[in-house]
Image 1 (cartoon, rainbow, N blue to C red):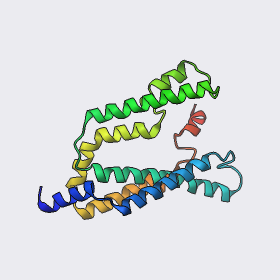
Image 2: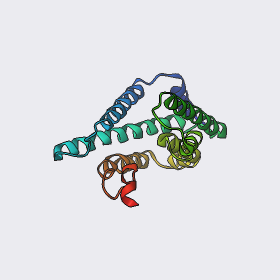
Image 3: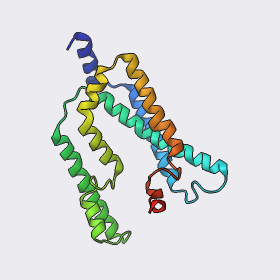
Image 4: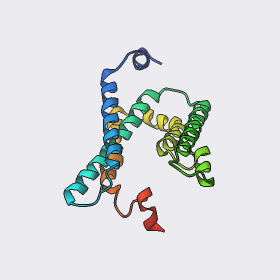
Length: 191
């Protein structure tokens, strides 16, 4: 590792980067707005303006999630893969999933049945918490993704980031609620 790379690594790990912290806060706000919009029962129905506004709110959530993934990639690019980290995240998710199910059962929010218990004990396997499932998969593939990212020139890397941002944030925002997307809301239509 040359001196410039050492300074970059030390800067990433030892110094607070206000610009990235601000970006993380903006991403959190975008995700919160998206989740608040989900509580609206008439979302995606009614006037064309309301449908457009709802689509934009959904896009905020997707863009916010993508920002978090990019920030994670920025800090993880030089880190070594550890299987113990996957196990730790998996077990934490199972623990909190069980706590949530038992709490909901205690307050009679849900009925406990076999399906609920299976989902509680295997939330990552069944994508009950899709972000954790996606994060674990991304982490498992990160050594290969990092190797690919390091092989690109700075200009190629910028173009690649712009392309995946357009594909997974901007374009997906407008395709997400189409009748052709396979999402939880469309599974009934496909059966």
